[in-house]
Structures are given as structure tokens and as C-alpha cells.
Image (cartoon, rainbow, N blue to C red; front, side, top):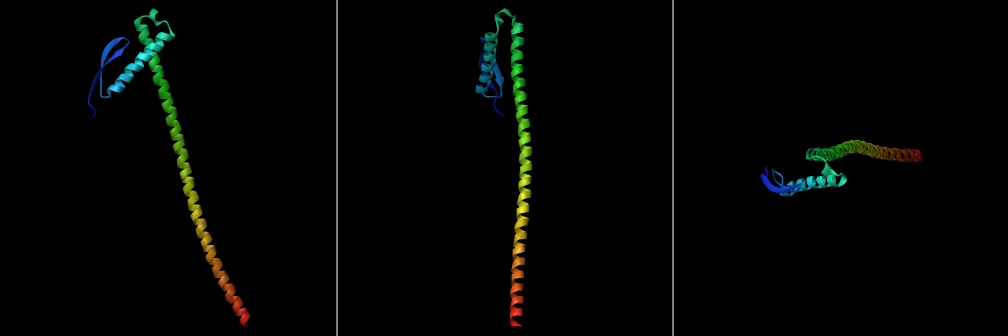
Amino acid sequence: MSAKTDIQVVIGGKVYTLSGYESEAYLQKIALYINNKMSELNESMNCKRLSSEMQKILLELNMADDYYKAKNQIDALEKDIEEKDKVEYDLKHELIAAQIRIEETLKEIENLKNENNELQKQIVKLETKAYHK
């Protein structure tokens, strides 16, 4: 298990101590994400007129929106992978069936060659008998 990490980050102009088992870089990335979301929100609307509670709610809504969009994208990708795995599975079975048919056909060809050789030998014997009579 990783060691616990404590790191000070600045979020919204205030210093916070984050603790977790993730790396410092990851925790910094989380703080940066929140700061970027806050900046986006401030740029897209005149949030200064809104109460801090309303700003917080809008920030949370935006982050939840990002989360659910990412989750939906992951779900779609997982479904796509499942479908591709099924196609791959089906193709592998078709390939195996085709290989078995090829092996059976090659055996049949070999049997027919042997039968043909035997028949050729019989023809030669019959012709030899007919010629000696």
C-alpha cells in the first residue's frame, strides 16, 4: 500500500491541505481541475452577483456533469469492447471450424490419392493380365 500523502494546494485562492494515498502530482491535478472549473464558471457567467452558496452549487453541478459525461463515455466504450470481444470470439470459432474443415478436406484428398493409386495399380494388373492372354 502506498504511503499517505499530505500536500498543500491552492483552491479558489485559499490554501488547503489534501491528504490521500495518491501521488502529490495527482492531488495537484485534482486541485487544478477544481480551479479550472471555477475559472470556467466565472468566465461563463457573472458569478460575482451570485451568492457563494449558489456559486458552489453551480460548481458542483458542472463537476457532476463532467463526471456523468465521462461515465457515459466509459460505459459506451465498455459496451463497444464487449461487442468487439463477442465478434472476435465468433470469428475465432469460425476460424477453428474452417481449419477443421481444411484438415478433413486434406485427409479426404490424401485418401482419394491413395485410392487413385490403388486403382491405377489394379488397371496396370488388369492390362498386364489382358496383354498376357
